[in-house]
Image (tube, rainbow, N blue to C red; front, side, top):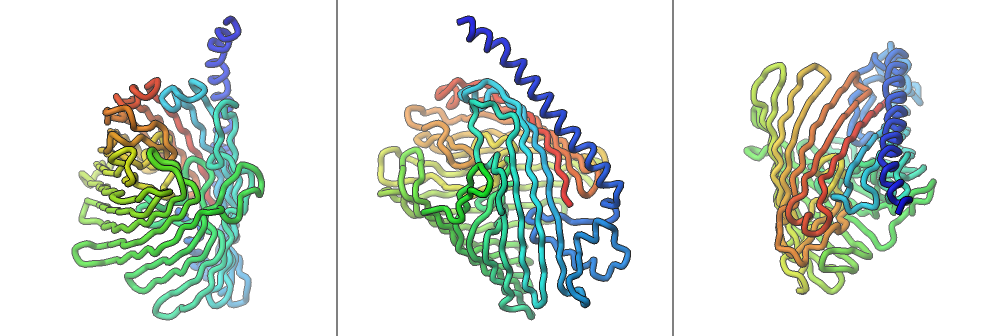
Length: 485
């Protein structure tokens, strides 16, 4: 009894001490390195870093005779004509997190403070006639995670060949047709279904082949891949995830009258073992969807609809669907540039337990921070309303606030995590209200290479969570620093 009481009294002090140690490491790295980088010529260029680094194009440096030291590594000529070149780059990020009452108090410990770090280094070799070879290493670590907490491969993956692929041009005239073979990141559309998973730490990749077609206002991708089976230690990721296949076709049509831009796609998934509220077994699922997006004056819009069918074990997937909307309105052309946003989603869950039909939507490979950086819940069996406001008080600082309300769409299905893992089963409860989440976002970009983000998030559980578990309020504090070059 005395030992237990002593642990309860001392544990919070150790957590606070660990938080200060991790935060001090974070500050030393991300407030000293950018100063050195900026002073040694990294501030001379005007880089445009893409979400997928292989999409960056530095051929404009070919004719620049006054390149800086930084620009010299972005364009290293490999031939007299300059048509062949090598580009080097990277990404260094630290992500400090303090959390209280993870999983609404049902996690093994009450609070934790830890640091996630990630380094990505890549080389991009362009040869004559459009042939190209891209190589990227990734190392991701979790520092100070409480021993009682589980560290996932998405948080720690010591060292891996994250991407290695070749682009082989099949056509390069009025239209472009490229065969891409190897390990590669993929994102499609609004990243609701397929994303590179920027958060929490280690990014996601696939092994396989793609055919990329571009002609005027039409972009298409046809692919057959296998998701990487990630593991924590160095060079232990499996080349192919056994029993898991992912294939499809994704088409985007730009500059369409009235609609502006349109996505039409089919995605297929085969998974050896899938665990849902009312089904366990081999999953074979097809997703068909369409997305309309564009901009009209001060209003940007993004509407998407998805329908899924297939089977899990001996049960049929039928009536799994999602409808989502994401709109932003610039209120006034002022210094603050105030923007109002509204997201809302209807995501199906299983309607009846114990029958032969499954209606739960599978979000496939979504962005890790689907509903904010903490990724407290995932996009399955949900109805959510998500208003937000963003202002720019200073040239390099953006402030935003968002408030999200969550309900279960079906009372016979549970709630799921960011990786579609079942958190609480839905059976035995007729309560639908999951809870509400408030997030504040302070984003500071001191220069084109460096970004800092401070993001406190509060989650107040609703009647369903209070009935299923301890139902404590969650608090997350995230401090992110990132350097790209």
